[in-house]
Length: 367
Ligand code: SF4
Image (cartoon, rainbow, N blue to C red; front, side):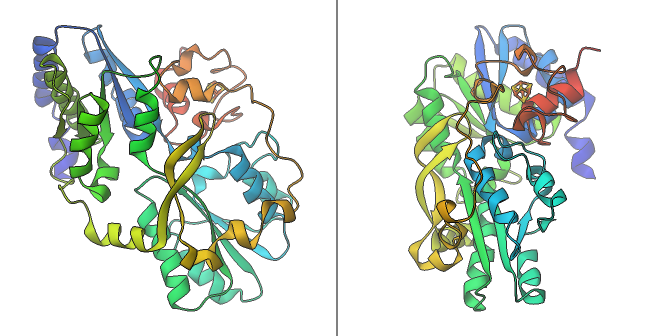
């Protein structure tokens, strides 16, 4: 409760806004990486408090937004099998695949798809349903990787043969490199996601800021956290310094969470990963190590042998990639609020509670 008021204190907000206006001399485009931060910015209208020459771009940090359609095609095909129970976090249920509908529809057609709040619930399902194969959809960034790794680790330790993970885990630094390699999308500075850095630590971002040639502030999620991150990167930007500042030290420490990192390293290895709409980015994801191959749903239920009716090959009408790369604001999409709404989404950014299009629809919709 303390932090709810402390980091939303109007006097503190006003002081930060005034300091940003005082020190900011030149136009700057700042990308927040995390969808949670996007929603906080829109919910509190923080972008409207900034000088007009400061633009906030909304990056690719919404996990279900970047989960590729081919992953959903595969998950839905597995869910249609009579011998499986598919476990997923709720925000993936309504994400449309271009070819196969969504997991809700698969459930409506008889698939056993269960919404979970922790990957470890898959262990209970496996115990109670020994005649079923339990498949957990392991998606997300460094924040979800430790819990997903824990599921694979415990499944192996306890000798389960009816648990597997369909993995689409992403890593933040490689996508920031890809964004900076594109002059159209490269921002002047980044706000890095505090919860990701709570796992990885702030140390890797010191070298990353120098490599990218842009300031990075590790930033929290309350209004004052976000404005402090903006102030910190603007100070560095105005000084021409490509450095990292940890603006979230109450949560993020230099070495991160060593236990979580150890578990992730035990279970996962880095691999190329497809990002929805953005293509395959080298070494931008995590896959199960060979020692965990028996728990890999992609190997247990190979795509070419699990009855995928159709793969998503046709580009969707949804220009989500342009939005997630900061090249287009959600409100500039021709379908925003018309063909595409949270009730009838054309793309994942309108579905997810972390999606930028949903954030604009909820908080910035023109009536
Ligand atoms: S408004 Fe809808 S169609 Fe447009 S980019 Fe967002 S999710 Fe896609």
